[in-house]
Length: 162
Image (cartoon, rainbow, N blue to C red):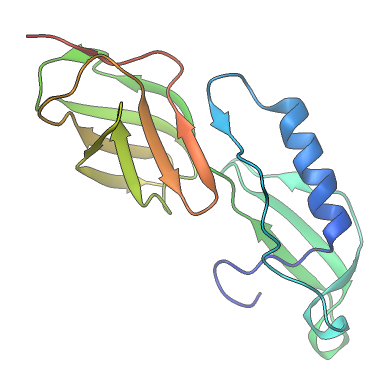
């Protein structure tokens, strides 16, 4: 594996994955926004070629796969990190300054959090847990997590109370 964000897959595999994600995504939880950007192109077999099995999804929400060819004649194992997925959150309502904990997957790479359209302070507790402070000026709205791979948000809004 060539680093944390390297994706070892041919273009047809990316197309297949995107079709699978679009067909299986749950409404209101994961947003995959086109256009897609090619992040890696195969130039030779040293970086992985000839996928040898279907992708599998781990409990962490990431997809894993293998190739038959790679460096030194050995295959390559790759990981495809997905957008954040929010399964649930608690503290469903409260005033500005309330700490809300979100539970889901793929939180480690989170770059920013929005409450409605406002940026919020947050702390990544683990890949499956994240805490966010409801910012001043917030109104009842969804909480959106953003990572380099896309956006995820809670299905029901957080209710801001006086």
